[in-house]
Amino acid sequence: MKYAFFPGCSLESTGWDFERSTRAVCQALGIELVDIPDWVCCGSTPAHTTNASLSVALPVMNLQKAKSMGLPVLTACASCYSRLRTANHTVLNDPEERSRAERVTGKPYDGRVEVRHLLDVLVNDLGVDAVRAKVRRPLKNVKVACYYGCLLTRPPNIVAFDDAEHPSSMDQLLTAIGAEAVEWPFKTECCGASLSITRSEIVNRLSHRLLSMARQAGADCLAVACPLCESNLDLRQADATKAHGAIPETPVLYITQLVGLALGLSNKDVGLEALTISPEPLLAGIGRDL
Amino acid sequence: MPDTPDWQNSTFLKEVERRSGTPVSACFQCHKCSTGCPIGPDSDLLSSQVMRMIHLGQENSVLESQAIWLCASCEACTTRCPMQIDIAAVMDSLRMMAVEAKVDLPNARGEQFNRSFLQSVRRNGRVFELGMMVAYKLRSRDFFTDAEKTGQMLAKGKLSLLPKKSGSAKEVADVFRRAGEEEKKR
Ligand code: SF4
Ligand code: SF4
Image (tube, rainbow over all chains, first blue to last red; front, side, top):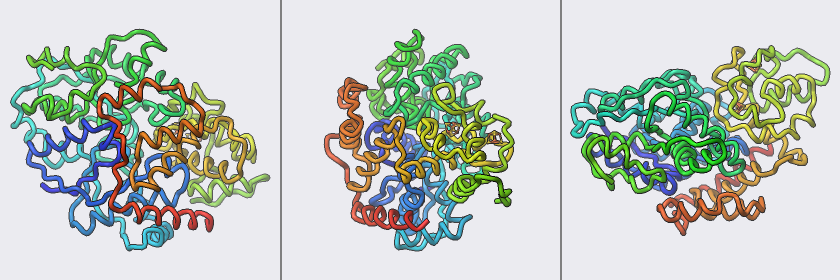
């Protein structure tokens, strides 16, 4: 199994622990990642709300590079995933936009390089049985709320590896590593995304809602697959509880950090030191320390 | 896209439909989009109200609303609309139209953030977060929010002090220039 890896800007900075744990987990599971050379930013929300041509052209630049590698693309960031998939969808279905993207990038592109999210690859290419077979330290007694956020499952005509309203792939993955995935109703509710910068009080409200619902459902931690979700729920957790009422501190980990721990990787291998809310209680429950 | 009935004041409606490529006129006001919208409680207009005001040609009220800048692009509305209206795409188009029309933005932070982010990408091929944050703070003059977060993030290695430039940064700058020219032709 070999993929062209698109890390994206967040995984180089705020989400470095997501990048480190993604690489470590893929290596442990025999998934080969070849970085897309000189990849560029996907444009994220600022591009698609500012300039439609740019919002297609930036992802297309990366897809053109992947095309010459002859590999499907794998990305871990939910937002990059959405932008790359959307660009493919636009180029495939709209001939006018396709020629515009080709004019802007100066190169041909047919919209046909496959783009996969890491969660999709782990559950649907590798399969949860293969993951389970490599578990060395099952996450017994860990009750986790799987938080998919907005862009992993929406809009379903563009992403579509799981159900848009009631996804289950992350639940399957975390159950395979021994954790208990609690049922809860906010799997795909929005955390406010980049409003964290412009209107942080809204993010505080939304994050508080998510965290308290996860707690009510019996979870003692959250699993995420997006650097923006992680920082809104983890880095901003203290602000959220200050503004909207106390909740027990709730660790928020990337799926790859949880999987990595179960595979027997070290805390450093999965970048646990990057977390703001300490995962110590969770580690104690599985007989490890920080 | 189905034909738009030729309503009175439909210039704005038609322009929004053309830009967003989605049939706003098909909205029958079920409010399903608004029910699931995460920013509804903080917004001056609900998404279903935005749709109706577009029907009614209320261009200024729509383009000057907070709602179009508060939209978090979460795609819940687009996913759920029974008429397959891509409401999130409409929000994108409205933001672009508001900037082009140079309306007085009720809260310019969304636009200032976009500009700071894209400037960073244009220069480096990738986002240089610390530089982008400084540019945004200077534009918005919002110096105090999250000042202590920056320290926390630096301590956790989440912000680098220097940009990690892409080897394709020069091509990215060209792509920005050509994309700007293409937008003018739309
Ligand atoms: S969900 Fe669709 S049809 Fe219903 S109010 Fe919203 S835009 Fe209109
Ligand atoms: S995409 Fe925007 S308008 Fe639609 S539900 Fe999300 S925040 Fe609301």
